[in-house]
Image (cartoon, rainbow, N blue to C red):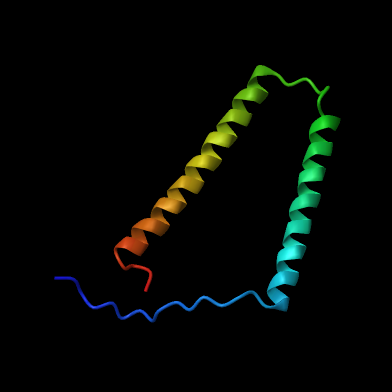
Length: 85
């Protein structure tokens, strides 16, 4: 038998004016950050990096990915086991 669900149903409402303004501002921030990243990437294209620099860059990417994956695992685990009430 399944237990009765005591959560209220989620109502879908359209985005209001403030929501659209926030969305436009956030998309603008995303666009500016992408343009800055492209500018920084091309400006630093001639900078040499040693083997140790590449090693630590890869290590930083791996650790960052592991932390993000671990946090997402904890979010889903707590949601499945009702620890987030």
